[in-house]
Structures are given as structure tokens and as C-alpha cells.
Length: 96
Image (cartoon, rainbow, N blue to C red; front, side, top):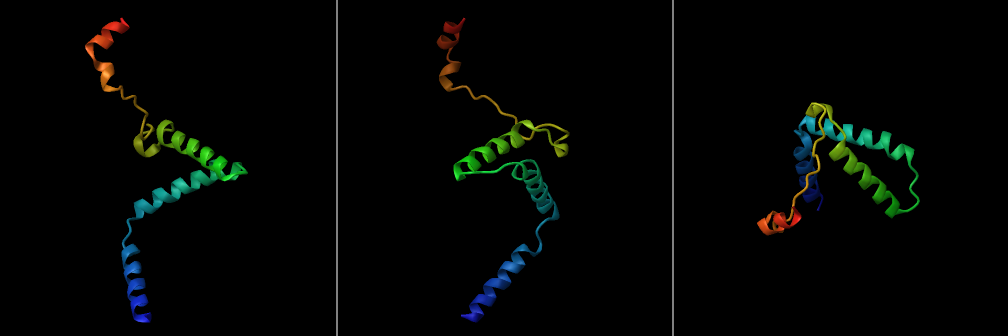
């Protein structure tokens, strides 16, 4: 059993040994902003309240907030996908 455990532990240590520095820098930057801008200023009384507030912050962070790495543009601006029936000629004619 101890031999098997040491093999697994060696495999795990090799797996993370060559992690790219940039990936960890991005994660640490995001975690710092999440902590500084949201978690340090909020008191969550229920799990559901925490989920809702964090999801609102995440959406704002990912869609509206400009990022310096993207030349101060938002990473994923929201788009509107019209349903296929809305592109129908008859439907468009009825709107005008």
C-alpha cells in the first residue's frame, strides 16, 4: 500500500511541476480582485445570497469591465442571438 501511495504522490508532483507561470499569475490576479472588491466588503448571511452576489460580480467582471490585457476592452461582451423565426421574411414584414 505504501508503494502505491508513493507512486501516486510522485505522479502528482510531476504533473504540476511544469505549470506555466502565466496561468498562475492570471488566477492569482483574479483571486486578488475577487477578494479585494467583493469578499472583503460583503457579509453573506446565507449560501444562496453568496451565490447570487458572486454570480452578479462574475458577470460584471467577465462582460462589462475592461481588462488591460485586452487593450481595455471587455473580455466577452454580451451579444443578442435572435431566434431563427425572427429572421423570417413574414415576421420582419409584420414588424414594419
